[in-house]
Amino acid sequence: GSWAAPPSSGAYGASGTIATCTIQGFIGKWFAGTANYYNVSLSILFLLMVRYKWTEKDLKTWKAQFFLLYLPPILNLILSIYPLIDNGYNFGGLNNCFIQSVPLNCKSRGVDCERGEHMEFYSLWFSTLNLAATNVLLLIFIALLIWTVFQIERKNDRYLAAGMRTSRKNTKDTAIQGMLYILAFFLTYLPWYVLMIMK
Image: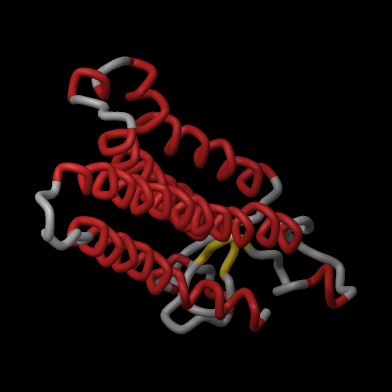
């Protein structure tokens, strides 16, 4: 909440310092971004298991563990460091400290920035587009998973006895689960998209 923001920010309940605001922003960016990457990683995992018949043994190799488990937090840690260096974690004007310049949107308003001069650009390219990219990747991997299940069911049609109806139950179930997975992810970040559009 806004408690981590310095009182000078004018935020309700602000009782922190620049340091506490920076810590809240850094941890929020790192953890939220890592959660996004893990959602994509999970969709890749499903695809590997269904399409490429990966087993538990395959998933225990160092390459699989590195790309599916360790790369998401490492990559997002790297993306979270630049705002730390540029004093870019500040009170965002709503309810918490995140990537923001001080005063708010100073660069686009033609005002001298006190902190986080490049954060409007960074926020657009490395937060908003990063989130959009994870949404697109999620859609692609879930679509590939649904297509794979459909192909498997279609191949199995040749084993049906004469007069038996083809069933696409697994494809339908996978499509419903996949769409619910994507919908949950999208709805979680819908407020973020609305905020970025309103800026």
